[in-house]
Length: 367
Image 1 (tube, rainbow, N blue to C red):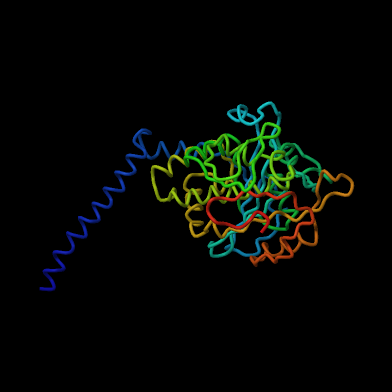
Image 2: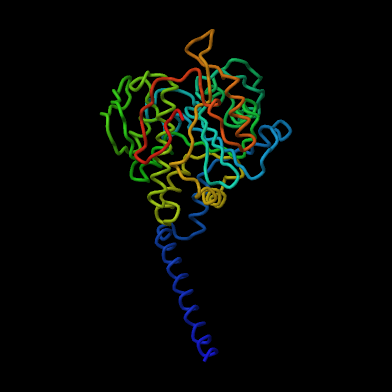
């Protein structure tokens, strides 16, 4: 009796296995049918990605050591380049490009949570000696605005500046420009945000009443770039909007199970990779997918968002400088994969109340 049952079960399992494989291939064909073949799609998406070899661009001997092997530090840059498709978006008459948004995201060992540290674009920093995209030497300079580093010497120099500022080894960097950000939001079908005070639309910004709004890609771009029409109109206040939009967007991706739906994943990947630059280790669809899957345990609702502690500059009150006492505590905690102490989050220059919240529950911008 036992042997007969076993003999019967094997074909059943085999049929079930064939059905599962058939369903998987059917899903793949639906997603990739218009493209002609899986290899074409892989090459198409991977070919969208520009990359930079950080060790080669910075010099492997000039970088901080890795302290906690399984922790990850990712520098996320939002570029305001007006080149190409970006020229039609949000005040396209501005020349050049800057790192409009910069966040160092720390993912601890275990990858079940994350901390995002926003670096204010007006922070005065020391730019290290770098090489630009043409290989020419850009000399060290003191008291330069952080967002000017990108325009003068490119993303590798921004990574080097952040590493010098923090003493933290940046494992990866990801840069998305205006067009890529807009397309990614539109591929999601929009992102929901809630305002506890109106956004006035000052200086060409977005005008919204207090309350909940579903924003498309164009309005989302205006939302994260709003400055004068919300809170106290400061760049520090805008950081709160950017952090909360990031949480709302991550919550939307999680809610839609975008990483588990082949059709939706392809749509997001096609939109996101068109305007993407990464370090060379992430510069393929396989590497990006593997890295994304490794972060599936990170819940956006528990992600901690912090602004790098800064103080108003005594020479130019329109600029800020790093508040060394608090920042040193912050960097040390992240470098050693420890919880950030409350004292390290107390920025002397705070900016006005960024009251935007994602619809999903999450930490406040100043937490």
